Image 1 (spheres, rainbow, N blue to C red):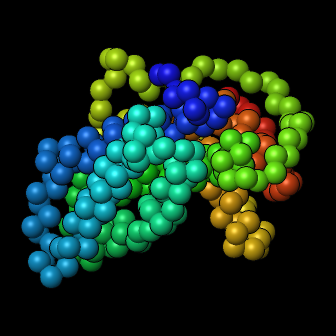
Image 2: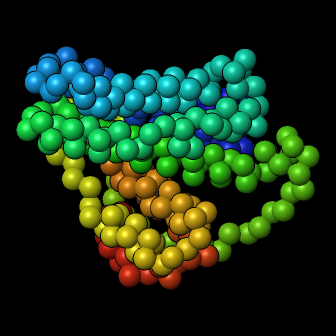
Length: 264
């Protein structure tokens, strides 16, 4: 896809946002399937007084998918909504991207089902899908921060340009990527993908270091973005950004570098 001319200097990041938008669009189809084609109708077994706690995972999850797909896929074409790079970045403040939702919804839904001895495969899949979407939100946050650090953003806002030469070198990269725009691709609610445990191990390592809140959130966002890229097929490119973004705290990830490299 051609990126609009005024954003060519940050095309790789705009392209990433568009790709994430397509992922959210695909997830929207999964929400519809899980609600209408699986066992979600048996939610009636849960007492009416608490049923809304389970219904919330569908309502919140699908709203997230619809909003994010619509907004992200409009970046490249809707000049009235996104006239500048600054407008793109500002648009996502106070939205799902920065935590404007109840992240406890999936856990509450699971707990409500357990308390009522009701086991629904569709709800389990919805909770898993919700978590996958949160990983994509982390990837969006990281990408927006990179855009805010770009020369184009600084030029638009009259900020001084401070060009720095990157000295990060990543070697031993191999493997192939998956084109999520393939014409033959179809949405499905079942997949053989199993997220490598190394990503959760990295997050636990971050939490054990007692960083300040901002630093911990920044590092966890980067790990979640890396995890999302592994499933979507752009891991090689995301790995380079990850190493660059966490370089100030690279010692935290040293025990995991060999394992991450093996995924390339």
